[in-house]
Amino acid sequence: MSDNLIDGSELDRWDPAFIPRALKLAAPLINRWFRVEVRGLQAIPPAGGVLLVSNHSGGALTPDPLVFGPAFYKTFGYDRPLYILAHYGVFFTPLRDYLGRLGAVHANPENAARALRSGAVVLVYPGGDYDAYRPTLSQNVIDFNGRTGYVRIAIETGVPIVPVVSIGAQETQLFLSRGDRLAKRLGLHRIRLDILPITIGLPFGMTMFFPANFPLPTKIVNQALDPIDVIARFGKNPDVAEVDAHVRSVMQHALHRLARQRRFPVLG
Image 1 (tube, one colour):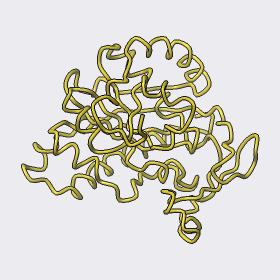
Image 2 (cartoon, one colour):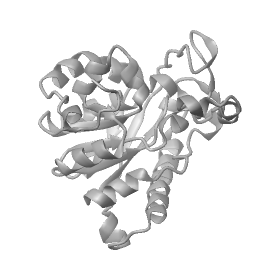
Image 3 (cartoon, helix red, strand yellow):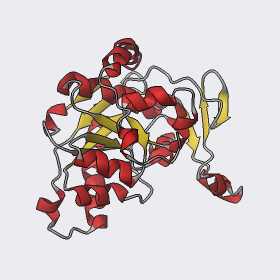
Image 4 (tube, helix red, strand yellow):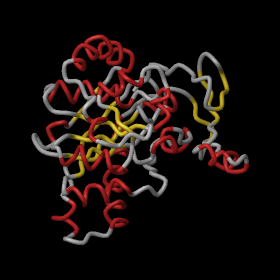
């Protein structure tokens, strides 16, 4: 099947019978390793399409979806689809079929709009790998790299935006630099790479993308915030930049609050 598939059949891969079996195996390991805490899921409207917008952390082996997904299904059950907009690169792995059954779909406007109009919940990480590889010194900064497509999708489909803030995964290793300037000099944009990150972790020490270091057992906390009704708050013709600035401001305030609650790196 094409890696650029954007028709409804990609959404149809979501398998509510497979998901509880997979989570039964994976969720206990994830929860114990990262001492997961997911708060505020009651803020998510109980029915209808919802766009969840989250910061992204942890580099190549980001635990973000594995932290949030089990908590979502525990709260809402397995009859409500949760689709995760994923970078095309993850579909080149041997796990691509399993990821599709778990709700991972190519991150493009068509998939997002179809899923939201069907009444599903869609989780998007607007900052993508740029956000997931933000330097450790900026680990508590919300940075989507100017990407505002999520706002346009929310306006187009008329669904609320629910910000979700995550903290802890950026402590799974030491992130020295995104390497975006180096990537630009090397012309990596030709293969859709805008960064060439430099990280330090275990067991490989200093790496640039690969091999991926194994994540440290840092405590990860997710916090779902109050829904934002874009039309009600910003009018019938909302300014995309204004909405984006508001969403990031709300998330930044919440991330600062979570950061103040952490006593020690990794330990939480």
